[in-house]
Image (cartoon, rainbow, N blue to C red):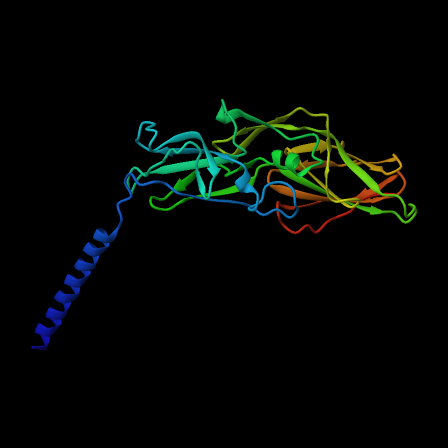
Length: 300
């Protein structure tokens, strides 16, 4: 009798497991030809200008999406499709992208700000030389997802933008020998490359061009803190900062070191401004949006 009870219990457990599996199959939604949703974010910004999650909605981005085995069918694929914010992220002209099936293999990538792109593998982006206002800093801030991502049917695409370029923060301190009435009115960075060629599909940098340019920085705090966005590049003992005061006097700092600015990195340059003589110092680097620890590059 005991043996019979054990066999009956085992049979019942097997039946229940089978029913549970059948239920799972029946309860799994069929995502075929249902719309694809979007979640859009950008990595943090430690300072005010440029893109952050509060001002992303004022710009559009370009989306590339490929569904394997669909022969470029526009229901399941797109090339540089413009996405805007209108009470939620949506396609500008009312298009819909659909899931082909629950097991469709889908990859995607995106960039911002969106523009007409003729060669995705060699897209040229230019930072502004005049970055004295927030709009020009933002226009210089290229965002991308860093290459193709895998998608899962039924889940919104996570568009997690990263900053593709570099940021420089400059903090000014007045030397003790300067008069109280002296204030700083502008900061410029010379010998800069301002164009970059990127592969938008792979999220890689091809080259930088247009060297020898001067960028005027944005004042996050007047007379103290300034910032700009740079294309990734190396200054071969050529980084030059010019600071102008309210009397028209120009204070100059030139680094005697090779300094490399990398994609997605944020750098802090601390300058003590007195006489024009340059002494020793360092520059600090952190991932874009991290708290800056700071080193000192000092003029006196």
